[in-house]
Length: 163
Image 1: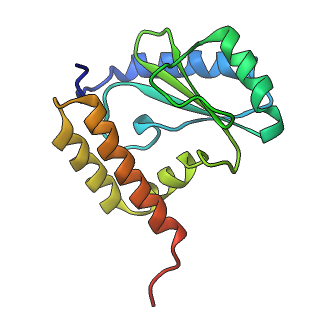
Image 2: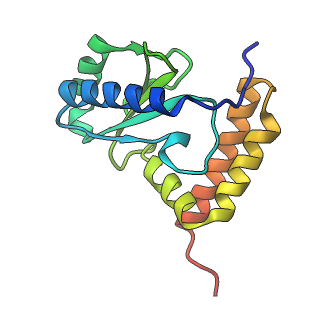
């Protein structure tokens, strides 16, 4: 059973891996919007020592982009694979994941979630508390709790302010 484990990453190693993967992605899918979308994308958010990248494309470019990424990276069998989303793993010195998704599609939520965390420090604190609570516990259970947290944050960002 895989466990969720919080860990720090050597900052120098993170910078090197981030640069290498971004350079590679920009060469392979120059037409896409590429951004860092995981815990390392926002100062103060703790994580499991990995780095995540989002590759955002227009709907009409999704299949072509997936074919390009399929040649360069391994699909992640533990992640969703459909006509709007594909997860990949990257062979690197630390865990690296790539999320390919359709712009304005069902899974285009990464920027909204990170923006909500940037605008409300209490959300960062709550997110970190959730991660600490699940440290050392089953990864699948952590992912379910994390998904519920993210869904709650995203619902709040869609609702008009009270008053």
